[in-house]
Length: 288
Image (cartoon, rainbow, N blue to C red):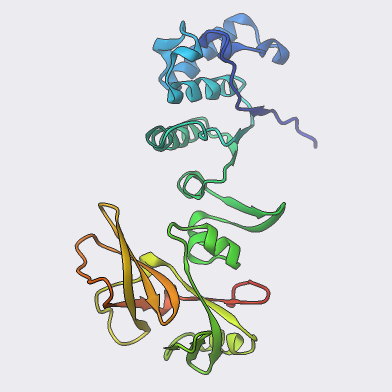
């Protein structure tokens, strides 16, 4: 049995007042005036713009303008909403606020929302399911946690996360990973099935995320233990990124802002084996 589905695109019209913008084009959907008035009131309450209905959008802040655009879509009671980078024109603080606002509205109206963005933070914080695309092809479909902890290829692994995942190219022989510069990493206790598959690849790429690096001792079993030759750091307030080299390979360690280090000297760090991922260097797909 076929079912008609209403799709509404979120867009903006700035030459009308807020009421008219929200109510615009409803005649197409054969909604009578009384119902339109009821819906405008209902939508404006959901969006928190009930006090601005007489204003023109140009008299509103960027965040309020985005709420008006959302209202124009919400009033249709559509089955699906399409949002094409709706936060791209907002400043950093407004973007953070509107991410939470759109998520809240989505939970209220419970309509399927297709949200297009190049911002991985928006995707990770707002989506129930993410489709990552490259050159028009789907790379992976999954929840934010699935994409973050088990990326299916090198592109997804590098796209999700800031700073991006650390990558070191080399070969696996037995329980030893040898980087291109000859630096060796002991992997005793790592998943033997994955090591066996990795050893059959001509070259592999070992990946681990900066935030999975711990500057404290995590024990002796199932742990990669390395030293980072510190080059520079970034203080972010709640966290700190420390950049340097493992052998001749660029590596970033994300740690707490109280970590003590000296530029030009080694900083020891541990990584649990469960946080280390191997990719086939040729296909760029995960080895699992």
